[in-house]
Image 1 (cartoon, one colour):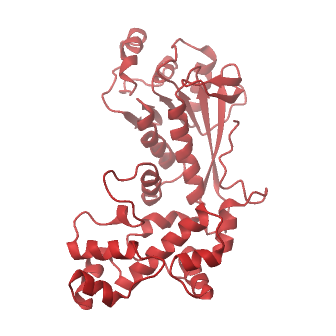
Image 2: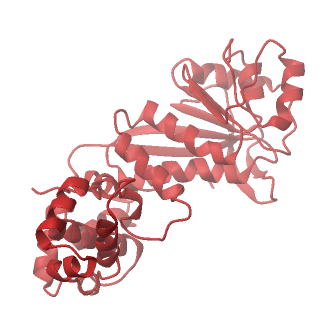
Image 3: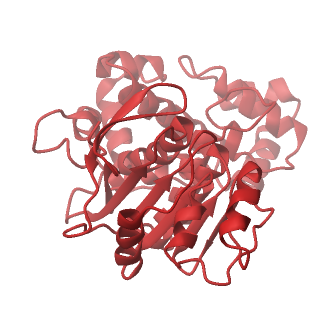
Length: 353
């Protein structure tokens, strides 16, 4: 079976892994404890990273649940409420517990949360977002380690725990304890937790999740833009731009070489040196990357997808897509978005809201 040769594999490797339907995914249970007036952006950032991980990785399934001290609806900092289960000390069994604080959250010791944090810390990861490091400190889980929290909370936390030192870093993950200072840092913190619990040695997968959530700034939108080497010759950049702008009606490689002012042989050498693939191979992988995006993100027919990505023959498109992604196009779509009970669990974050 073929595989991606060019740097485009960074965008597609997770989807190819998910096409491997043999075996069972490892289930990782992640619980979010919502404090009253919690930061909704922080929660959604962390949960979306886990949901993206489920979408593009078949090896680990993150099962997410939301909890609170009283249960029921918990109001966020923007007035949107999220439903939750009532937190209990007995029978609470999670691989990771992330407490979501916020700018409007009032801090005070909570004996029940303290017990649950201690119990979870015995075998899993505990984390606090925004000002929720307070509760990790209250449970005695920070020790002498530095912690991250929003700067507006430094004063209050230091009043309760003068022996602890707040860090200027936005997030810290060490010794199965994690803290972050704001919603932006929640992504990096969550990715670190995912690597610890579910995606060991899979830097490509985590980089892809981060790319999805933090696209490059100040650059034109393009399917291959984020995977181009930092310094490549201008003719090669122009050639890639031509390919990206001519997906539906692919250009001949000779025409591309002529347009950028080099010979075909020179263009082939530069593609091999900087992109590890011949120009026609890179072009094919670029078109199939676009096809994967259309299959997952739209309900267009497979024939339309084939035509939109420059394949005049559906059987040819079928074969090449299956070669690189491991499943036929329609099966690939069904596998990602099936709503029946047999297939929806792998890609759905199991939440209570």
